Structures are given as structure tokens and as C-alpha cells.
Length: 270
Image (cartoon, rainbow, N blue to C red; front, side, top):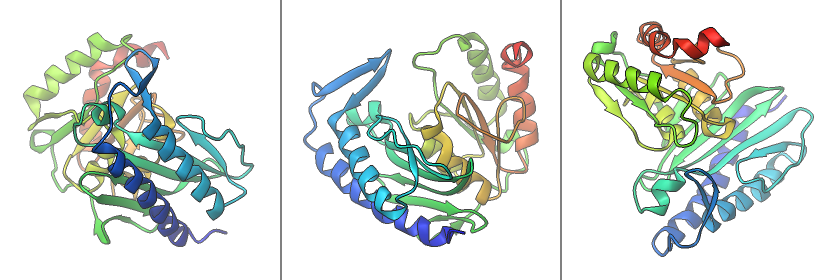
């Protein structure tokens, strides 16, 4: 059995190295050096360079592990272990010189997330968690917010950038939360949104149309910090990012109930 805490600290070391590369390139990056993968979906040599570094260093930590990596640097399959990597979460922010953006790395064992790291590059904040070990920010343990109601909550989300099939329902949900909470924030990095739920800066986060690398590490952070994560139907297993709702334990039931009111059409169809 792996020592999850030790592996988590080794992940932190690998992530810090990739973050130094991103920081160095940030000051001299030219937006013309950008490739388009799809509608509003961009990639740069910085994404690819960060991912290559992570794949190489993480491969040394656990050679038998496979990879699920956003830019496809490695397609290696693992029978028991798998790294889930977003080398630059918030690429569009990075391209335009806007903060924040992050690195997100998770380790899965038999389809369970057992370690996760999210590094907010510009703020130099490193969030990390391991199974049954709590969640941490720069060596200080963190917990979800103690707010008890949505009326006391700050809610984070992300706007769809290519899948607009549920946009009308989503916009109705935004109108509702604008009226019934402390407000809405949209940072452009799901891993950071989840990390901020874990440390109590946000009470809740929801989004649809994401991918496993966007949410894997952040999901563990929230859960180890005392929060809850599910899809819009309340299913807590196999969170892929297609639908995700995360919140403090006290706010979560009310939050999920409200999401279901507005995103109900898709849930009914499923």
C-alpha cells in the first residue's frame, strides 16, 4: 500500500518545478504562439512544456502509473495507478496576462483519488491533500467554510466555452444565485475554484462541461477539507467534470437542491 502523504509531497516537488517554467515564460509569452484545439479551446508551448516536465518527473515517482493528461503528452496506461494532469488550468487567462492560472495533478488508485495538488502559480499558493490526511495550503491545514446558508455564501462557477446545450438553464441559475447569495465569481480555473471551496473562500462551486483533469485534484481537496462533491443528480462517485457541484458540508444540501431546480431538464433526460 502506498504512503499517500509521502507521495503527495513528492507531487508537490514536481509541480513546483513545472510552476517555475510557467512563471519564467509568463513574462515573455506572445499570444501569437497559440494553437486552437477547438471552439475557444487553446493550447500553447507552455501547456505542453509544463505537461512534459510533469510526465517525466511523476513517471519517476511511480513508474507503473499511467497518465490521463490534457495535452496527450503520454498515453501510457496503468493497471492500478494513474496520474491525472492539467499542466496549465486557466490557459485563456495565461494567454491574456490575467490571473489566476494553476497546475493540477491527482493520483488515482483503482479509480479512487488518493492524492492531489493544485498550485496557483501567480499567488504561489500550493493546495494539497491525500486520502484520510486532510487538506492543506502552504503547510497549514484548511477547512471548508462554516457558513450555514446560501444567503451567507459566495458561489463560484465557470461559463461554458464550447458546449452551449444547457446555456439557457445555466443562465437562469446564475440569475437565481445573484439574487440569493453574496454573489457569483468566475475565475476561469476550475481547480482554483475547488481549492477555494476547500479553504473556505468560496462556499460553493458548480459547472458543467469540464474534464477529469480539471476537477480530480480539487475534488479530493474539498472532500478532505470537510466538503461534499457530486454531479447535479447528487451522485458522489466517478466525478468526471461533465457535471460538478461542490460546497461546504453545511451549505451543500441547499446548494444542490437549487442547482437541480435550474439544471433539471438535463437530469430528467438522463
